[in-house]
Length: 607
Image (cartoon, rainbow, N blue to C red; front, side, top):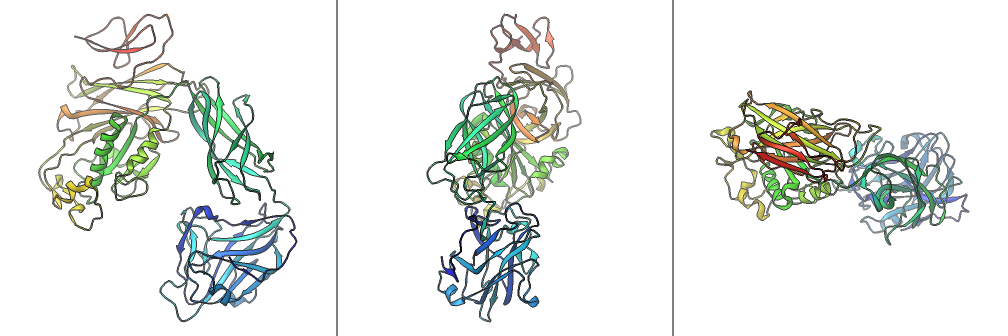
């Protein structure tokens, strides 16, 4: 870096580089400048808790190409600055352009010290710089580096004083500020939220730590209060190379915690007590959330709702992605192909909230928490990588085990009798969460004649960019595929947004809950082959809008899924239930759900 017009200034207090952007966010060139004067700044709002009354000693910023710059000035002003107004009213520093041009062009910071430190008023101010470009310039002669995180800011990026929209990110500029309000050892925690984990020792609690002091953070002391229980203070050492070094640059860490408490839902508070062994000086040293503490982890299955259409030229990659996921994860992956604007569309699904999460096709949603490409994943890779997203979803602890039975009714030929068995592994007396069962009927091997059943195929063109062996079948296929069989197709839904109910409150640890549903499909015109139908049961959390778990079974006599090992009170006699959840005086013909005295659940078929 180059320090321009540097002077020796005694520190008023602790000092640090401040900005809405920090180096850990990365940066990329955004916003081409035009010939003439161009002004850029960040705004310090009125009453800023740190910066009001602080001293600004220097400014640093990044320009992607300085060769077209003929004048450079750094300034602080209480009003939106425009050179037609003359000098700014707080501070101005003219920069020797020759010094700037001697610097490397690619990503090197320009650092400018004010001849005299400037004090920011409590009423707010702009901290900015202006570049004047000469007559010799390219199309984008001097782009401004903006944050690549895409998060935007309410005070961040201005170009010619027009708001650059949130997706432009934050202007990559920082001010060296000195303030009596700055502490050396200070960290603020946030983002505790609701976390689910099993009882035991050294469980991992995720939290975001934001350094609000001037010293790099190497260790933190912390105390976790769970319900009315305050656990012993512990210390966490950040791994070497990942210390918190950038002021106001948040980082998510996992803190080990011991949780020997009963399996319940608890209000939780995390307090950061020490930083590098010193008392934490942060005014916001605690964060509140909740912990769902499980007796044991349920068997997690993750659902990918893949939005597709026969008319969609890029959608064949979703077919490949779903097949690869099924091969890799087996029955822990449940795929649902939701067709939009073609002959297989289910209207309620097309109008659902989850569809609004996924704009454009192809697109998919995993457990209604992650929106991603059904083949390339969240990073939209041109190779199969969505398996990484599904693996992360499967690692999320499941609050309950879920099983499902489905068969065609012997009395009503167009009705499917569905039974869902749910066992939660924690107690929630406070009813802090609500759950509900939704159902999706899917069919494999669907096909038909005519243009409406032809799959458009963009990959038949040589320049599609998808060169994986997985996509060879579509690269070698015609632009319209006439003999394709569609799998995992949603042909009916029930309670797709908020569920049908079926979960009673309060939730009790280890208690079996049975839900039955008579699914009348007499008006359904999509079903082609009853022998290729399966029912997917979704355990929804309507409050969070997520899928907490799922199970899938073939219709008419498929095997039970994931209902073994459910604990009941010891010493009780075996109890039989129908798959519709009704307690039976004695077994009936067909499928019975039997709870044994030893706490296990069995499926019993009586002929």
